[in-house]
Length: 114
Figure 1 (cartoon, rainbow, N blue to C red):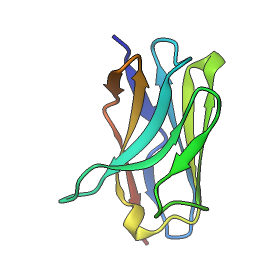
Figure 2 (figure 1 turned 90 degrees about the vertical axis):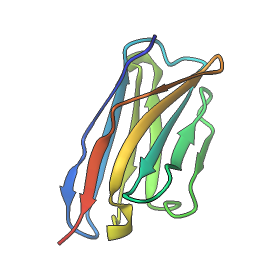
Figure 3 (figure 1 turned 30 degrees about the vertical axis):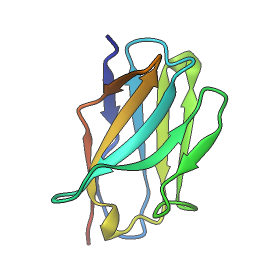
């Protein structure tokens, strides 16, 4: 069993930036790391995903504003979020998909408001 712990959420003004981190209790090597988010009353959606080799893909609403990266040696994945908008307000969840197993973190709240 792999535990995932997110950090870095908080309150930020529109146009601001935040960096989320997610550290895993086990190796993330060979795993696909992802960030998802869920806003009140909405379904959970993909924000960004990064494969072990570094290939990434992003949700359409965050392309050009968010950047996902990973440090396999530290078992950590990051999400750099720039130009934040009110629509980015949600609980952000870290995900590890490895050997067909899915692991989720508890989530971290991101609120974009003036």
